[in-house]
Image (cartoon, rainbow, N blue to C red; front, side, top):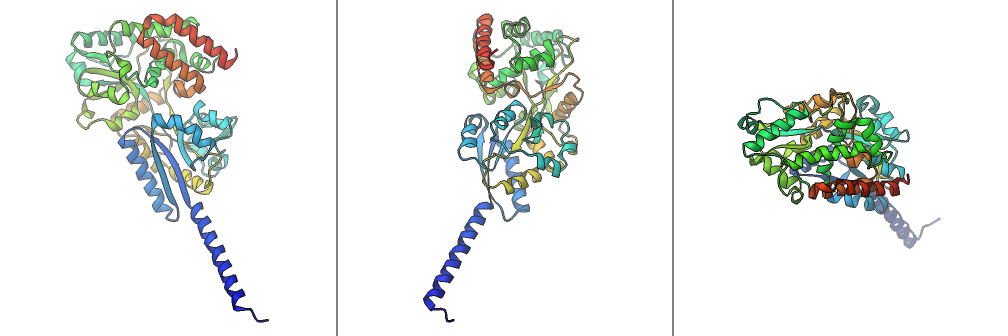
Length: 417
């Protein structure tokens, strides 16, 4: 049978179109899209480096990454996940992760954990990465919280050792103020920086078991133990130990108080060390938040950062490949150094940065438990209201009772208890 030229041309055209469509689909499938939250140039730089390494190892995959400032990222993430999500997002473990896992917006990563032997590498962070018995997160780094301080300013004020107890801390603050140095910098415009103070005062006064019940909405905010947190905090404010107008400054604006020698201490996570000016690193020290009640087992904040695959991601194959690439001891070490944190991978080498080493020692010696952080340990709506209450308290510390009553009404509404 003889094929007519016109028929042959049509067949060739159809085959070409089919091939082109296949190539287009393949090209689309080989594009990996990710959204990465970052804070500061050093954090963006290390993620860029890791992504470039992945691209070299996977030359057939085109990576499109959008870097978004962390505060804007928090606001935009829910819309991404429910409408047109990327293939990879970075986020946080604990309640922050569970919120989206519960709603079916994060991919179950059980096969990744089993295939890549993550159970052994991430034993300490598996619980925080799991919801209802299934892991939805690939841990990257975690970090310690504690008191950063200027060694030279301590010397100037005649403080001979790092405060280990609350009385020693109050005495050091008194000496700093007498020397014309504001004891503590805090950027209260970022409400989460205030939440760090609430966490540590509650953990030191009441312990992690009570703290987690409060985070779960099981304790009234009018409980005397919660009020004790605020009255202890109020003592520091009344004594003038914080910078003036702290609600006017975010974290980036508050750090220069340390760098310029105007303030001596700051309660913060070790992730900020990546942004320290070179001349500051030798004079910066770091110590565990002081013990208030020696009978309360010492607990710490140790938030875990993580990577996730949105359940509506288009290119899950490449997303799983990226997770496997990042969950190695070498990449864990690289991310930890660039993010001013500790690698969540137990096979990564111990940190060589002095402050990271102290943070590692603090977390590894903790016997009272590790919390994820105020707004990562509780439902978002309650956390937002709680942090708003903290800002109201800092603005007017005399309103403790009315603020706690307001928060209790909110707790009853949210948890229906």
